[in-house]
Length: 261
Figure (cartoon, rainbow, N blue to C red):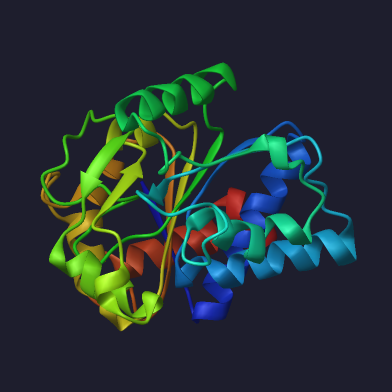
């Protein structure tokens, strides 16, 4: 795991967008794992701008989202399908048939999860997985005590997650209490992971995930086991990290980051 500290939220999101763009230019057939949430909106806005202004081409890539709420139709404006269509898919030249999300409306959720895992495998696995981190340390909807070898499955959401996401629904009672999510093991199978975290509210949990013990109580801590994981943070999110000076040294001195400095 490597931690890259940027001076601001804008700089952190810009770096992540540039990493995705570079991977897509190097491999037009990229299989891209996507995340949702407020942290990602600016990343997708930057990618849409790159498509419009620089010709960043999404025509041949395939995407798999981390999660979807159970019981929300794709056209529901609170569904993650709607979110992705609104923030990215409708603004770039991606084929809809190449965009995949778990089917939260399936009659048989277990079968839908099995099909999702199979679809990822049939695509050759995820090349680049974009991640955020929840206030309880979850990645995807892998809530505390998620098995570190778990696969795509249905999960009951914690009160913390409901409190965090409920305001987006207007009335918190309208928010689904279950979701389908890639498992921690599914995420760890990706070839590269990039986690983006910004703001002071993420500082405590980020420090636990990056520098604390690997534990099912903080599913993001499992990323310490990944052979190619980059954590991109702004100064506020980095506030509780003990190795801040070393992380800054890496960004300023490692040759692979020269083009991004």
